[in-house]
Image (cartoon, rainbow, N blue to C red; front, side, top):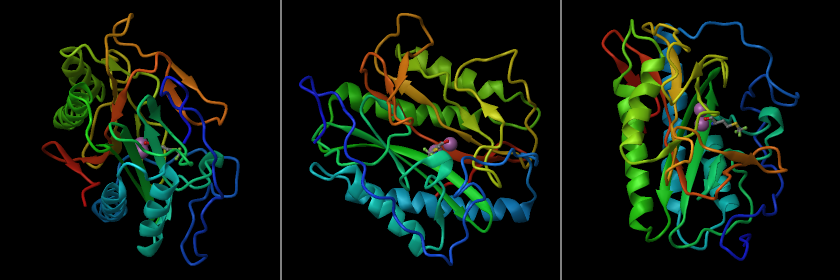
Length: 294
Ligand code: MF3
Ligand code: CO
Ligand code: CO
């Protein structure tokens, strides 16, 4: 039950990695220090998009299965088991497992953990917020999403942050259109977040996804113009995954963070609550289609 005296998270015990049956194909990086550099395109044809959609659907259904298991008293490792078993039962590989040495099958990030939390023996308590980030690899494609959930009854400011981060993701996605620069997405997200005095995490971004888990294409969640001026084209596939924090940062627009000694868990330096939602999307002729729907 790792919390310190002030209720903040401390690293827990990480159990053994879960097994994936040998019949399920692995991404190329599994069993290696990291992925090979990706030199492919961020644009996909209809057949390829269909495969990303299929992987994204399984990932989204796995998030639903995990959500149904969230309650006070459950550990994040128990949530990992639910997500892992769902993916494997649907012949998908949990993309997180063995990615640059990540030891678990999903990411679970509680309260002040921004992202990349490792499931462990942390017990969820009434009033917590847990972010569940699941990526499925199936038929050569990755689909990646994250959703945040309240545990039991959450405080009004936490519930507001949760709904507004969901809305920030929606606004980012609605700004997508062919011919526009990719930096319009972060502009939409940041301008909405600013209304409420929320912090916007800048150092973790959306990314191209599909054949590669992270293609190299970067999708900021803040207004990065004139940088990140890649023009969106039909068939481009990437994630949008804003991380917003409660409370006004001293330097508007930036969020200070620390990485734990586990090499993964990213937490807000001031311990403030943070929420993330993520979808994988494809740019269409008219806008965007979400590929990570259940
Ligand atoms: N799914 C995360 C993302 O949105 C990446 C997790 S990497 C892992 O990009 F190794 F922690 F799983
Ligand atoms: Co993700
Ligand atoms: Co992602």
